[in-house]
Amino acid sequence: MPSQPFTGRVQLPVLILAAVFLVVVMPALNAFGIIENFTLNLWGKYLCYSIMAISIDLLWGYTGLLCLGQALFFTLGGYMMGMHLMLMIGKLGQYKSELPDFMVFLGHTEIPAFWQPFYSFPFALAMVFLVPGLLSYVFGYLAFRSRIKGVYFSILTQALTYGMALLFFKNDLLMGGNNGFTDFRTLLGADLRTASTQRILYICTAVLMVAVVAGCKWLTNSRFGLIQRAIRDSENRVLFSGYATANFKLFIFVTSAMIAAFAGALYVPQVGIINPSEMTTEKSLEAVVWVALGGRGTLVGPVVGAISVNALKSWATRAYPDLWVLILGGTFVLIVMFMPKGIVGLPSQIQEIIAKIRRRSLQADPVQPAISSETADP
Image 1 (cartoon, rainbow, N blue to C red):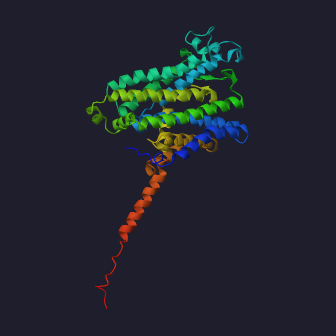
Image 2 (tube, rainbow, N blue to C red):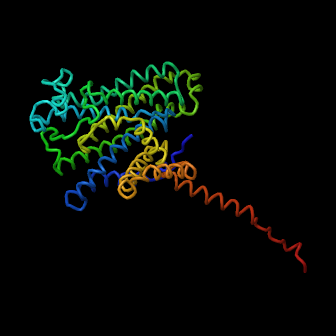
Image 3 (tube, rainbow, N blue to C red):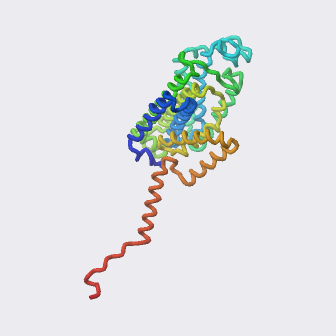
């Protein structure tokens, strides 16, 4: 059973300080020109990935469901927000048409019927939750009612992601095809190219990440969380106790999908593009690596892992672009072999090693009993 070496020992004030730094200090430093706009925008991207990593940990670390399709829900949320952003471009696009540029390029003369409701921001925001939530509900209902679990569940989620990626690559779907959506201009009347708008988006992302960590922490510490971990450790025992484990797993699966989708919706206006490449299976596999490196079953670990790996990627793709994959793979192998509890488990692992060394030294050098004065030579 995964331990919680970091969150169980680090005092709450430290976590609060970290949250304040991300939510308040970094935007303030950016406003005063100490942190560049590019850096803040890059950290906004990291935090979006961190939220997706938390959703994976909620499934894998606490429920024992290794989902290899979480990038699908992340990207679907991004597409729902991207449809609204594309319609807000208006005649500012390359073709000076009310239609998105890719529709003009494909020869369309009017907005498709299923696009028109996305002129409304509230509708687009609702679809960010409803579309991934409905897809995850249908898929999860069929999978869990059929008692599919373990590696078979992972393979099915991977197949679902692969199939949806192939669908979104098609131009006939009218979702941008291979290029996806880009060239966004405004959101709720604010210019997305200005530093102030990007700063607000970063703050929203940081607040969401803190709220997701707090909410998942509350959930996993509740009675529901106890059943959730019991399902992870021995689902058959939970079934024999009279609990409908399929309902619990379905609830967690849908919740994690909507968390990832909301992260995707915030990712799109900050990064400025969304396309089917974000939906491919390797993206989901990469996100699983973030969770494993940070520390599975800790909630804080996925955040540390996502930020660390993506920061390493940003540096390595510039310094050693041809070796980035080898660097990531080598790092993952080393941590799995020598740091099974992840980055956040390193302090407790070091303490265990020190305690083991001390026990061995005591066994090697036992304390000699004192010689009694009665048996001592005169």
